Length: 464
Image (spheres, rainbow, N blue to C red):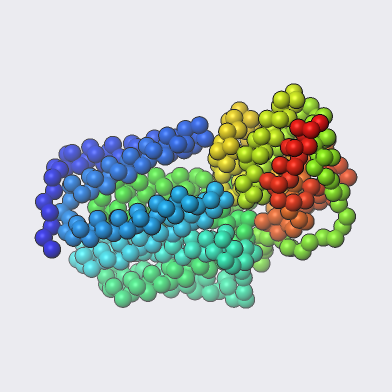
């Protein structure tokens, strides 16, 4: 089919690409704060729209109806899915989108390989094999993270005898195939490289425990960014290079921050199981006695306290109890009680997850306290109300060397005068380890769905 003539000259194309790149940078800055996240998201969407229109107006494109049809089909699928997805499923959605980006970059590189046939195109072939390999790893790895988060497979590390040897063999074979593709430009060998990349992605993520999967998603996001940047070199598109580099850099920084929040290195998280370690503990449920409580007893504790710190976790998100938690905080504040929300960096399953959830319930930003500023306040708290969280308040992170979460910074709720856990059961958290604080004499447990328990406690507080 005949390609259309470009409507924009190179100068206007460069200026519009520059405008889109500035939008992407401003979007990243906006997304760094809950206050500006919505605006940052809109600015990023504007940058993407500018980039898309510029491509259509500045390139000799063939098969435009097919391209428009593909965009329409993709939008028709993605828009309703994104609108219906629950807040608790956002990590899965991020994993899916991330995998699609990596897979798309790998396919583009595979299709461009026949056009980079001249010997002097060696650097282009190098960019192609990099995009193929990293994009395939990101696609397959993201698929496994989605399956783990969606509990389509076990969240525990999956290891087997000979895994390190197999992983090493796959990587060596991938390097050999990559070298052969660069030297010969062979498409069949590129397909082999793609398959090895997919296998490497699966083997890389299988041994990672459920508690560390969000960090792996962030790392794979960085991989996708690098693959997209390399595909920009292949296609000669400066904006793809800029956008991919921004995604790669921001993903790398976020990965390091999340790993630091978990108290472990990225290398340990990714390869700890290869050395015989584990990133998860036992899922066995202890039969030791605990002190159960009733909504009325919890209401008395809260209603006559001077300072209450609420610690929201994934259980709150699952139960969609954020509005009730906000209403309970309001009822306590109406009684003159100082109420704050303590936010762990990886509360929920992704950074910022809990901030968005509570913002949705109109909890003031001023009431949300990051771990670094709230930990010193637990000593003055009469009650720490832990709603659906476990691993991020587990003292084993400080007291038990050898624990899978040892060294992870935690919210120090054990320092509060009284601790109340709202839990469905005694089942361990996502890391699969017991929390000794549950058996502490100053701890009371109110079992049940977090939203139902909060509703009952709220009613009892109002009745005081």
